[in-house]
Length: 75
Image 1: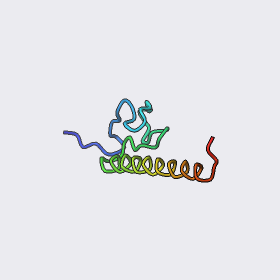
Image 2 (image 1 turned 90 degrees about the vertical axis):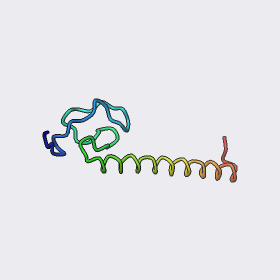
Image 3 (image 1 turned 30 degrees about the horizontal axis):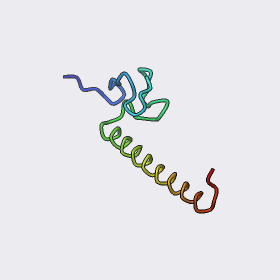
Image 4 (image 1 turned 60 degrees about the vertical axis):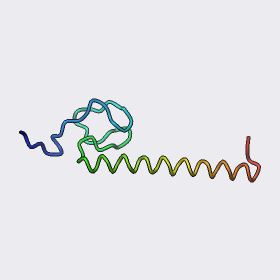
């Protein structure tokens, strides 16, 4: 069995995070920054951080919407 370094690690046909099709030489997705050739831990950490930021953004959007309603800026 071959021992591949992180640099030589083959990448998937599309980015698991955003579905963009990367170049074979890309270490990171050019669209979202996903570590295509990163370790399993780096890839899991990226996806957890992405989900956390998505939840945080949803909460901030909701808070902004509530403030607009409270102060009469609703369209």
